[in-house]
Amino acid sequence: MKAGEPMKRIILLFFTVSICMLCTSFTGADVNTYSITVNKSTNCVTIYKINSKGEYEPVKAMICSVGANNGTPSGTFRTKEKYTWRALFGNVYGQYATRINGNILFHSVYYKTTSPDTLKWEEYNKLGTSASMGCVRLTAADAKWIYDNCPIGTEVKIIDNGSDPFVRPKAIKLGVNAKYPNWDPTDPNENNPWKTEGVKFHYKSLYKSVKASEGLTSEKLAGLIRYGVTAYDTANNPIDYLLAYDIEPTTPGKYEVKYYAKDVLGNYGEITGYITIEKD
Image 1 (spheres, one colour):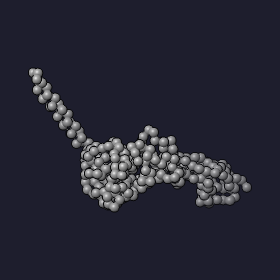
Image 2: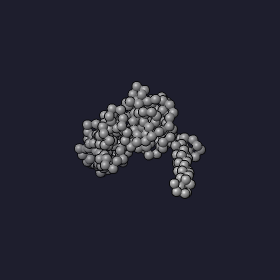
Image 3: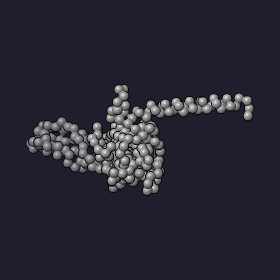
Image 4: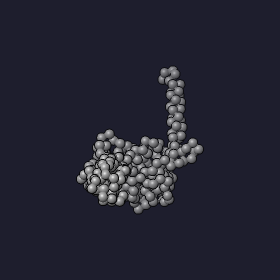
């Protein structure tokens, strides 16, 4: 051994330990930024963030599926590991998984393989019900949010019942009319084909007319405007839409009507139609 080598090793060891201590200190600060509560009775996850007073306040809600037959354990835990993809029971895979405790994880609805175009859409449609073997299933976007923002060591409280601070979000349904049922519509993957889809309207005609002498009530006028117009969400499910217009049904003229809707993914669509109030 050459002279000076032990000293170099001591210095290197000290440097390594120092770096580890810095990492531990940094992680210790971050793990308290958020706290997560899973309500088994409502299948809702609430994210709490610590404020300037050192108190946790709710900032985000997520729809989830906890274990069927009380398969998800109650208690307070600290997250332990993270995985971009994780093998699950039944030879399937979850995306953006965060281990809560033991075999219990946050993860996306499961896929047949580690490819994002193999989603089991029938299971996706169960979000909001108790359907898993014990893990907490989420949309891909929500699973990724926890994966990205909540470091290992984040507190997770799993409660049996109680009220939630926010209304639980809805999840879109993937049915026979969905163009890409094997992709999670919320997945931020750049290759997700759902990115080119959105809210759409089907209609027979956007040009309608009625005689002023008919003196339509506001209810009948709205019925005429809506006739033959249907809105669909991103996955081609019929959804409600709103109208915007200023029409005097007894005053002849051509009036503009706006049809607009927003789906549970936040996608927005609108079209413009016209109604003519004709003279007698």
